Image (tube, rainbow, N blue to C red; front, side, top):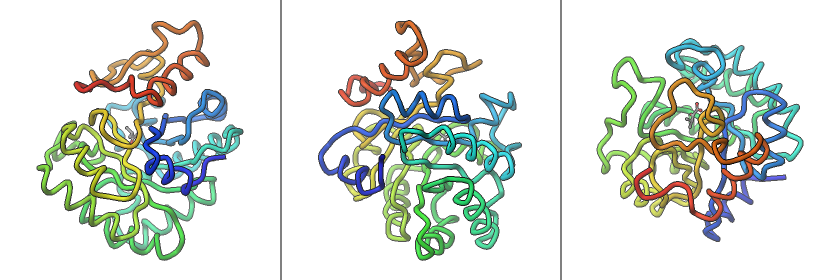
Length: 254
Ligand code: KIV
């Protein structure tokens, strides 16, 4: 069983945290058996499962449905993080109701995209005892405004990370943040910082399951197909966990 305290200890000990997205019971079980510490029911399911061009069409009801499936398959008791989807946190009250639905479906922690905008909701959730994960850098839910890239300068990212932690966030995902900035953020905050396309100097790594298995239509350049050299899915997932744990993945350029 992985707890938030265990994840914080892993950061302190310098043990890299292995995270994968999972969208159903079968893969939740396999990811847990492979040794993952954290499962993320990401709204990336809109793209890799539903076939949309972005995460924007994903609804709260769909996130609840997938969370229930993943929670049932989470036999290894990985820490279970779930995305609040596009516009389901448009107001604080709406965000609270969305978090309630996701926690009641089995989430251990909810993830919110953005910096200053989400601070009031992070504060309310933390006060209510709901663990919160922030998400900075490339924000897929802001694709219409910014595209698929990080547009926030290093100084602002650092300030946003500190503000999220001060508001009560207990984990942070950094997506496509320059490696040196990600390193500075991971050093500046006490919460575990999980990177995706943000270099090796953070506290853990997350990849989208379909990219790891080599079955995505378009995988980002920073990801790796672990299926290519593994004989089967369990071996590919175990190879990913091992590569994260030993620091072999990602390299400086990922
Ligand atoms: O939705 C998702 O899968 C995510 C990861 C890319 C971090 O947010």
